Length: 324
Image (cartoon, rainbow, N blue to C red; front, side):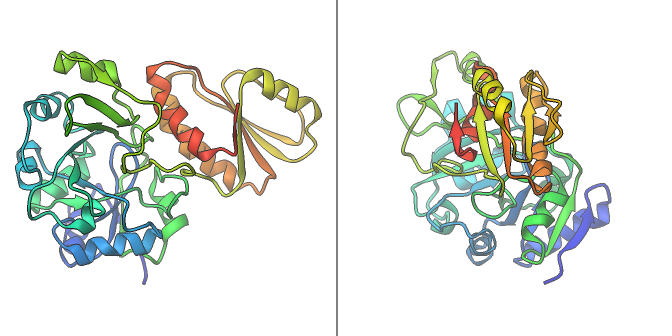
């Protein structure tokens, strides 16, 4: 299969992408988080192609991307007041709401679970596609399973060229890290995957505590021990560990850090942003660049602590061979 490259800035190309999705094909689409591998969420056979293209286990649930908040009622058994409040505050945007699924929602989409993840994406091209053509798409990250999430069309083609009908090129993603997933099916509200929206921001809207367990066993996208990994071995170390390791390193490495520097010839140095949002935006991009250099290892200085940095820490914990 030849993968077409379409422009998210051309209405004719957006229409072509919608047509391909309606025909049961896979199309990589830009979102404000990462690029998604989209299939018509109402077409179980089309959704099944996602798992085949990615090499993703079929019991891993997918997130359904909607045109607007009113579509929640088509996919959820009930829409609680908490969902309406969060949707009003954060949609379109990088927030996924986990709700009990409606009767007709395919088990292929939900990985056999009784819950479904829903969100309204903020990227204008994808939002236009969903709204103009009355579509809902299941769309996990458009990359081979457990590999780096793609934040531009080039990354999609590196991993999946020939395995999907088209990629809709909308440029670099605004956030660069996947959406926050919030579970609204229990007695308490809790974050199941860290993302751009924090617990404090959610709590401020709801007027109640929002918990964020460090570990949980609920099946949601991204909750596997090894994930988001470059092909090159990645080590994450704190500043002290990194300085010690740099004293004796002889292999060719890439160094991605906020403060620690090296002028050694065998070290390819990349300065990372000190702002959490900027850091998240470039993290997968810089890892992808380093991954193409043919070096022995990638070393990364562990980012600061705090709610704004939890999403980066979560991704790095799963991506790294060692976390300092």
